[in-house]
Image (cartoon, rainbow, N blue to C red):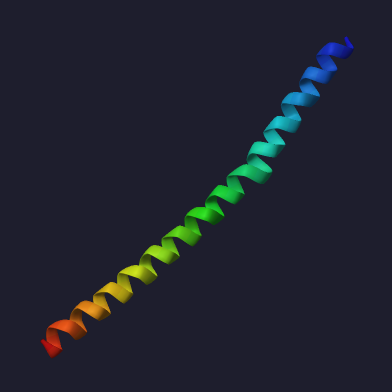
Length: 55
């Protein structure tokens, strides 16, 4: 009986770790990467436009 209870508690703890800690961290990392990519795109676009206007 205790083995079943411990298995259920382990599954619940595992689900908590995955959905409470890992997924929010991954979503935050993807948001950061998206913002960084947009910023890099804007910088490259500005540099390209300035180079074409002066060149």
